[in-house]
Length: 187
Image (cartoon, rainbow, N blue to C red; front, side, top):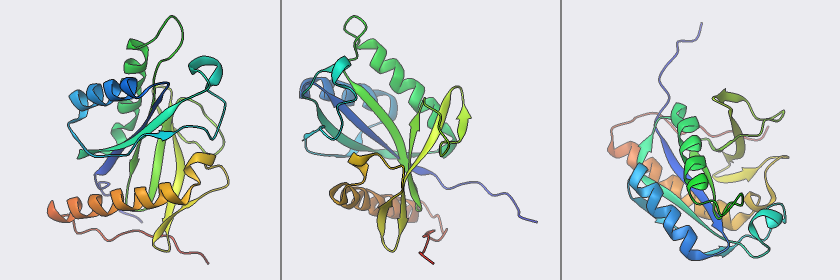
């Protein structure tokens, strides 16, 4: 029989994209009010791997990734997604979003994103929110899965997430967590 144990705290991350950098900066400020200061903010990069958001948000979108200094409980992810939705709604222009905020978390073993869209690989959490296993950590790097969004199946992003993961592991160590890293190996 297995003995249930509490999951380790996880590293809160966000992908924020919008038609203009000032909208992203405003979203980062709003997120900082709720979750504390970021300890990493990426450079602004084009968000051009999909045209899915173009009808609502326009053709030219830019994106930044950030991770927050404070760690969170993994079970709080639905609350974070609902709060991100509130911020998106506060910035609507008519019925059009001006900013898209996708929260998730990094753990030792994977990157999970929160979504309101269910699918076969997305287990339901609560309150209309699902977990999307987006990347796994194996063989000392992040790896994509068959359903990983094309923009997340990018080795440059894996390097960025690897650096964030290293900081997270240091935070766990500094907090006295002794759990070993969980890495899946190819068999």
